[in-house]
Image 1: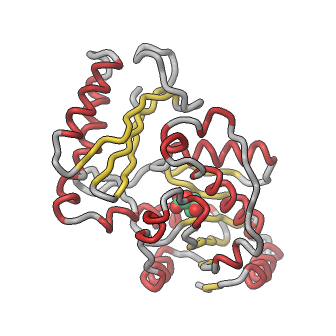
Image 2: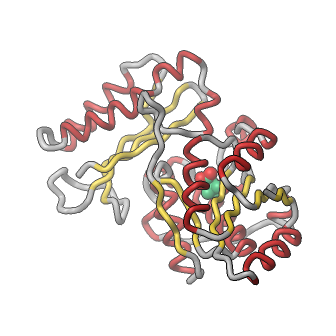
Length: 280
Ligand code: PAF
């Protein structure tokens, strides 16, 4: 595996790979890699001739500067893990490489980013679109792999690719969970032992919502979820929404005739955790 730090080096390396007729797969990450990321890398390597993984903590997608400062950075360990997962090229650029000039582009995703993460983290998806479009432009992959844990991010990135007409296929990959149900996230490393012990309640509550969906109405379901999460001293519900899986707009009723996704954001102290599950 090669580790490259500059756009020029990466372009050179990838043009050699592409001239050998290899398809290029790309997994963008912010590092602090876990089994969830590695499952994306392994799938990417299985499906593509060359697997490229970026490690870059993107400042423009953090609306909370404290969150950016706290975000775990573990480059040496990440590089080791990527080697074992079959990555061919790890791209770990500096901020100046990614943004030689400040990125002032403003993206429009329609109603997709006016709910949930978009509503609670103003500017977050604009920052995601800035970095993902920049990285896609540098890597020019055939396929780019994203995890369904960031369900809204997947919808926003797919919409961005569609609107810009980018020649890349976005590949959706399932959530990877700990044995106790907690969705894998780089932020899990920031949890105290008490918060970590409480955190599986998030997935447990989502799975309970799946079981209850035919027997309660939407208001009752929302109250049951809020009560279950807030009953833990370690957790505080930020939002629980049932949305149409395609448009991401909240449903008016659990009887709405669309595939429904239940999405949740919870605070464990200063750590913000998100998760989601298909309801129907
Ligand atoms: O999902 C993430 O880790 C980030 O939002 C991404 C896609 C790497 C962009 O910085």
